[in-house]
Length: 323
Image (cartoon, rainbow, N blue to C red; front, side, top):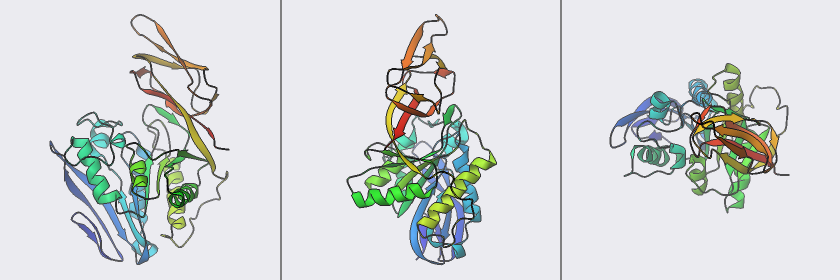
């Protein structure tokens, strides 16, 4: 069966690489795609990187996977989009697009007649994500964000779908697997879950780093997932996972109460209790202090490393083991 995305086509047993121009209303962007159409039947797996700018590990891993994955090794079809959001990746280098200051991972499945970022989300969802049998969205800690590597997914009302998604998340081989209690919201993997697609979010790396070992860790996880899904016959040539995956659940988020300078007392990896002071936001002009407390008990899995914050900026995300 021919694999087609827009004008790009890959016949069975072939790999095609190229870009597709996407009209965003006020401008046009070129979306890079790698289509690997396997030599034998199997599922269609979609992998996206570069949904956010400043998150380089996922972009690197997706591009490298697209370069090394060959049709003779593949059962099914693999669609790889290394840079899903070019304005944010190349121009903004942050989570929000410089075109309209919108975080694309809050507006999926997008709107075909909306603003530029909504249109981009709609195109990605309609042409790339919606046809998947499984989907992985690759992220990392951005330029001002510390993070413990984890895999995330969302629960739905479909128990069979949730079991398949959980098994896919565990197959990555990371120590922490975080599940959200619903598939609501504008994240790409949540929107995919609402469509009945097993979908995961993979977070690898921190502070906008691009160390080779981080990319290797993510590539190893992707190969494990592709083997789990039946796309690759051979198991990945990696060392065994040192720590079995463990299910975690989000318990709280802490946001900045004011504009100012952020001075944390608790950082990523620390265990905190609800009501504990975890830092202060200081007004740089007057020196006034806003005490910031934990909204829940658990471990900080990612947190703000930047000094300057605005009201509503996420300072810490807290989770704890589900058991």
